Length: 256
Image 1 (spheres, helix red, strand yellow):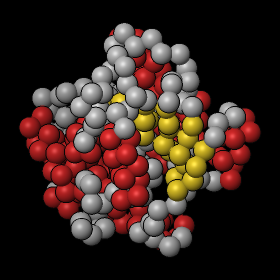
Image 2: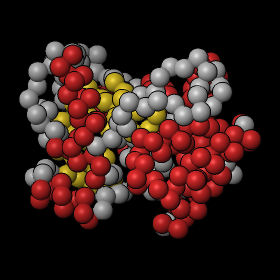
Image 3: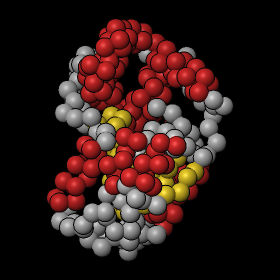
């Protein structure tokens, strides 16, 4: 539990966590799709738009591809989407997450740090994961609160890379927290080079299964101290990871 004396005006520090492949081994959008398809098998058909766009995905960009992917929720009411996303978070969180990294989160809470979960995954379910794990604040890719979910939902901006830090800076300004950057006594937790802007506004980094390139950039370019954690994954190699991801995308991965 967080330190009861912690306040936003005078925190003991900041802990900034990525989600996918940092707190959990999987891409949560794929796991979420698998969750949906087990409950609504015919919704696999909505991914036809996503599959057709794959050859030009680099041209379309992550935001448009995410809109195509979220067609799997088309026609569902606000209440149905809420039930699905809450159920998803309740089912997988926290037992499906890395125990080693969850322990680091708990240490930060106990030390009185403001804990922030910031993910490119849709806020639809990231908000519930943040609540389940006890984060002080949660950011994800924002999607309007539709009465009836459309075929291609609007997405203002994909909460990734520099967008994460811009939103964090705006949030700090709105809260009247005028800390300089890097944030005092702050740690960024990530697996990805996409989070280098997040690392840059932190004093140190904790890297999860990092590439050599990521370690080099953090230490030599950003000049940040870091530690490495390699928690046990539920797959042995890239092939195993890819096979599981394809099964999730097709909705045939076991719901454990």
